Image (cartoon, rainbow, N blue to C red):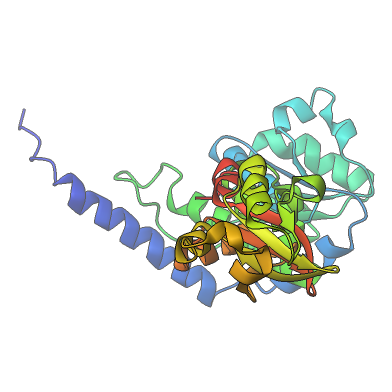
Length: 321
């Protein structure tokens, strides 16, 4: 028996795989299924949910697609075809639309879902490589995938095909996002936790306000200003005249006026027209502003009225870094 030839270097194999899949994605973009726009229009009109399903690796892609739809403003759910045949078909209603994924279009486990869609007139979208397959023939819309080679060594393991399917699912989700006018504020509402949620927090979510604010007036003696700064714990005092923010007193102002400091008033020491932010500014942007100007505190205003204060530690505690 002859010995097998030495394996190719792993890096070379990786480049070949990536090149194969990249070429398939380029081809998919160039040969975008003609039904893509009708499918987007249909999914946008669905009053219920987008049900996505597939078997094996296609099932994993289906779960990712459903999660992407749901997190970007299109209610969706992944239903396992095996569980569907044992009661979960009840999750699919005439108000929904179904996307079934099968590279061959002949996946036996999808048969009951196909029959259910036909029985209850549920719109069915097929994502498949074969236009003459059972799935494609049963579907209302077919998103036909290019017949591109798999990237694995034996040409059989789902690699290129699943990459193309997932990418086309992303294209559907993004197209629907754009048509729905789904923006950063909506995304934040659906992603309150984790790094994404933190990056989309607004200043209003973490700012200190009301009795927490270190507020002084122009005629406040500096002895009282120091007491206020110490009690509130932010290292600054906000100078307010009437209901208008007029200035800020920082450690730097104290040092610059160290000689005879206690003989002055807040109005004589404060820096006028301080840097501010607004309640609806992204916390990430406010943190960038503080970093750019070596500040640890930003006063928050609406118009010229003081409404809050954020400390750099508030941003860090919220997970914005």
